[in-house]
Image (cartoon, rainbow, N blue to C red; front, side, top):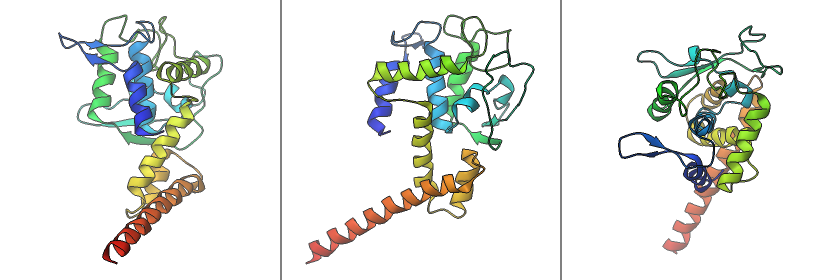
Length: 222
């Protein structure tokens, strides 16, 4: 996605600071799902995690104390997972640093009273429904489609957010030592070929821009 599209989504579903310091959301979703849906979007975009990984985040996945890393763990056949169709985390486990803004938003979700805040006491999973049950795969798919509809950014999917993250990370890491290895780790890929494609595209963009800059200097000097 282009940055303008990300901003369009944030404008359609993201909060604004109220007069008393509280978060005020557009009426795109019901009061009980506004903070959760925006936070699901921001978490997926910032961390680059897959839909199944997003839905498998639990309260004990979050950092404690001075830490900033969110743990992406597989948790197969978790007895705490009450969903009929359990989300799958089939790839490598990892710890991904989260920004202060994302961690602050997560704290708001966990501490705000209802209807904005998380319904507690029923499941250890992070993202829950109004009844306190973990968000299902079908509900998550409905959420991302609705986000696309409200923002005008279509088609929109969880995979598109991961693709956007991977392109940004590849651009940043392509010229760093062991950049591909770092991207493989952060993205949780078990097959490095997936990460290599993003690195190669980033290098191709950088090479093309370098040639254009060369041409500009060449003809300006001429």
